[in-house]
Image (cartoon, rainbow, N blue to C red; front, side, top):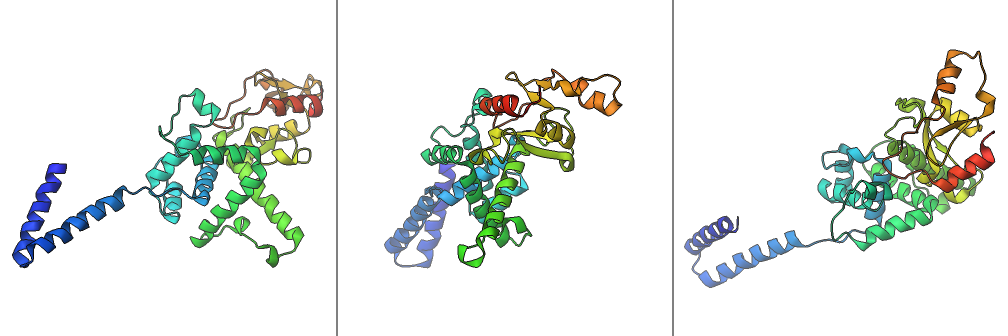
Length: 296
């Protein structure tokens, strides 16, 4: 490769010599041009905080199997932040390498991954709601600039709206992040019955939304359920034990029931749930559900 480059340079210099009498200066100009061009190509531009949280937001909301440079969403975001699709995809893999789920699967990022990646990872895990809101805002700005209708993502300034409207907007953004992150973690399938129709799926909080504000956007406090099992889990008719198996309340263990009751409840008792490809459900949250929500 280098030999081919040198041959091209020699040919270019020979042509310049024919076109000018000032051979020395012309050579200096072309050599400087080549040197500066290579330097610009090799120059690494550090990722900004906004770029990192956009990449992490995308990692959270995208199924792991879809993280590749040909993904249209990755291509679109890469154009907005002026990075290559490969760079964005690799940054997302770097984040995946920090997730215990992927570490157990031996997923590795770049050997010399940025310390900032770990900082963003830790920052999100310390305050999911704040970072979910911030990352949704930044991502929303990019989508707005792209001309795509995305009304839930409009960024509103403090001086523009009343406090209640601000609060409502924040809640919508956080809820949207939680839903997309949890459902993508379970590959848009119910963790119990495997139903994979997105319109029939909910991202359910293990510790209820109203109980723990800090964990409202935490995907490890979430499970993907179809609407049937979401309702059952929310009302304490079923829970998940420490081995990730379904446990039913005595209230649903009755005889002579309709087929839906039998299939939806009785036939799922004791089965292992489908585990996510990121953000494993937290055992502390599951313990809370068994002790505070589940009807024995």
